[in-house]
Image 1 (tube, rainbow, N blue to C red):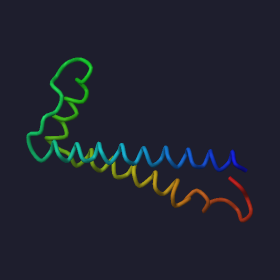
Image 2 (image 1 turned 30 degrees about the vertical axis):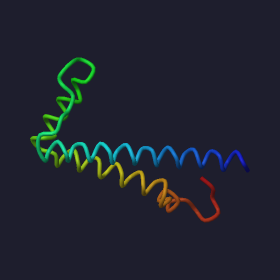
Image 3 (image 1 turned 60 degrees about the vertical axis):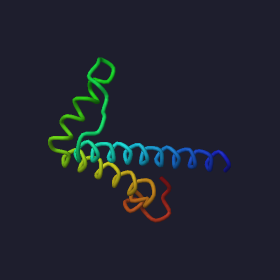
Length: 93
């Protein structure tokens, strides 16, 4: 039983960490869209981040919508237990 609780706790913490990461990313995209904030200079390791910042500053809505959907899916799946709706009474997932 303790192993089951530990597994559930680890899963909950991972989901929480994912929500925090998505929120930070969402805040960063919204900040880039609002105006000039410093974002990484274009050099090889951070080139994808720089291009994402340029794209997000032009049109942040698609990025923010995708992040919102991902966050809603995480919350519905792990905190609202939405998957249990399709299980029969007494059946364990």
